[in-house]
Image (cartoon, rainbow, N blue to C red; front, side):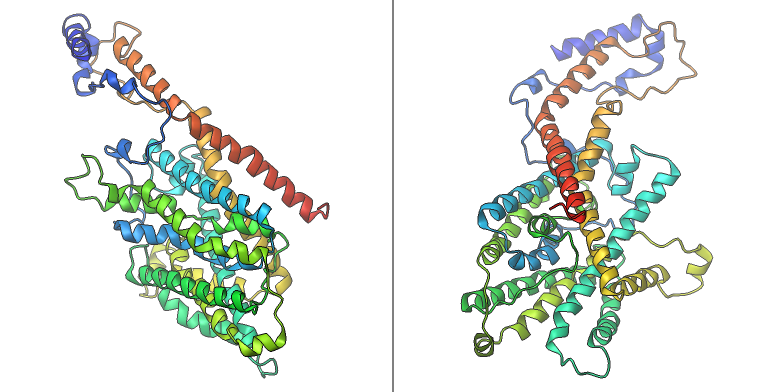
Length: 484
């Protein structure tokens, strides 16, 4: 039937409408098989089958081609950082902890899917570009860029501060100089060269991220032994909002979904970009694998949380594992800082100043900010810790849902097969219909089909906005107000 439609359309263009003939509509017309309308109306496929013709702007300096194994490493690494290290000390009963744990694990995979679908739909590869597709004012552009960089800086300072806090108890308390200050400076000097990678493709950034996963596994083994021996000591965060459920939610936060998706797509060979992507380059499969691995590695920590130890002094003396657990904890956080800073926007330094020296001024300025925040007094840093928690939760769970609703419900849908509605000065328009009615009908049919495919995702998005987003916000306000 479609071939008859095509023949009719060419006959209509060639003989009945010189205006449409001037538009050269044959270059825009594509053949869409009728059997595409068959099958399930809901899109549960994990393959990137709709992504084969996507064209992205990958001009960001940190978006470079990355192989599937490296992308999987970066997808897994955020789940094995501060949130996971705090899980054994949340003291959440299993009847509350396990449902929340699996819920946020599923939501982590779900929000990555939402970002992936938005990136594919809008043909954008960066968080700033996806958000600014809907808000193009310069002021909002500055806010988005500043918010992205600010969250990266504060998260890195939180990693640095918490790593120092777990190391300080290993040193004598009667030292001449404060051990936390000395340790922070020493660690910063060692860490700065490792944080100079300009992209996620930098070898030093990849190695640091890989070693951070290894140190987490070693930490997990030591913590498991300590818990079995009854010598696992408690640990807590300084912020007021770092309670059991919020810590679980923070465990599954991440902020590099879009750059990793663009990097994975950029790694495809040129001969494959117009064909179906191989399974190894399916971003959604890699995302689900990363979440599954994170669940396997962190699920035992939920049981440690539900059944905490009450170590006795003599037990700690017999099984002195704390001198080994603390360094593994600190290394896991410190080695995660380079990947956090690699995707941080550059500071607005004039071009003349940057070219006058070989020192990476932007990266140096960002690292100094991280160091300054990490050295703030405990009371002030507790507020910063809560700010990082709230921003991480909003950017992971709330922001993709909000952008999804804005893109699909508050804006006109993007065309699927209709050519761009640009004026043609050489066309003699004699009818108010600028495009063929057959194409318009097919466009409407494909738009309805896309809407059916999005039903399940739309339901999940509204769940993120209302019960999770609004409910979590109400709890945070009430907790800070002392109501609960």
